[in-house]
Length: 110
Length: 387
View 1 (tube, each protein chain N blue to C red):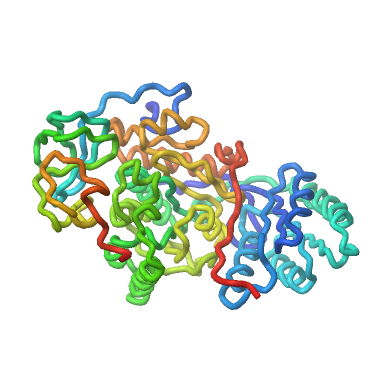
View 2 (cartoon, each protein chain N blue to C red; view 1 turned 45 degrees about the vertical axis):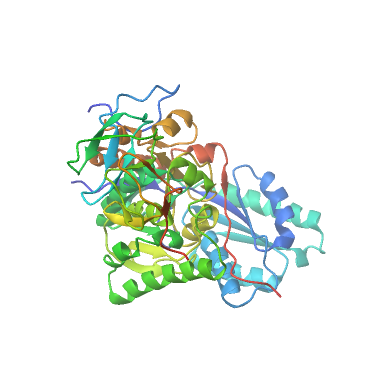
């Protein structure tokens, strides 16, 4: 039986091992990807996941787990993650820009 | 595949316990401080106090009574020491607990000359006798089908929705396929994902109940003029990268896996049959967990993104995160590290197998960090004003 790859956290806090990709695209319809680690501006990121979108150049730094646009998105257009709408763009968003509460709003609860 | 078992405490009625707690239960606010003194004098006892109790009305009162009986009859409770002020309420609850087959002693302030010290003395003696009798119980191999697991997420980040919650979903599917039961709640966190849940409803009535429950919560927020942004997702979620309730919900519902949803339970309502259930309840973890535990859940699977130390007092709460930074930081909080999946170093299927082994290990007696550090509590939702 090999050592399990997951399980109890290691004591002492080893640094995470190398990341296989920079960002994850969860569904072919998605127009955003999620950073798997902190990413830098002008970085050409290697995308993992279902979409064959290749690399995207970032226009701003993206923190771990934050989202960026995979393509240009028009104001009012739905932001798609998990293949589902997670809200609408409140202004035009260019590919490689950070997508968060400053340019994305929920369509629900209002 | 062999049928997996865990080492549990068989009960007179219903499923086996994964723990054998003496529950010191104060049924209303008046006796809370005395119950605290009593529990302190009985090492190992679990204290649950209801801060309210007098003048409750209608559905609020029904929910309060359902939660009290639910905690007392949870399989993890080996015996109950009931403490209250008014005999009718205490007597009725004592009857319910006795009918369930759980040993119970009840001490009422009215029978103690209205003296908290007399009550404490009698309660400590009664509790000591219960602890002595309970200590004779032994664990035995029990089928996994006897497990009822509550599914929760708290202080989530996008890693929760991408890895930790789908991982819980896979383990839930494995357990439900073997005859176990599971429940997810946090109704507001179905918002924007309700069409996906609705497709999995076992019947049209369940589909309608799921959709109506989430619409009711949405209208509740809209009528009060509450912007969900900053509320749910909250400030911690937003800082971690979650932008809208839809994004959070799509990640949150992954905990429920892919099994059919057999029904929508009221808060603290026990499921009528095995399988996966939804509970219409607050999305706030303390209230949500207590709803599951009062419904009979013996074990909780709780994902977090950046970290969340809160656990149930009565049900071992398995904490997991897939966030590599959190996994490095929270060695004495996280019972399971799913960050290898996030880093691409392990598959979700391998992690699900490991997490199921952790579930069986903890169900069989290994302590969670939350139990060791005593981070547990029970908090019951209220619905309205009291007289």
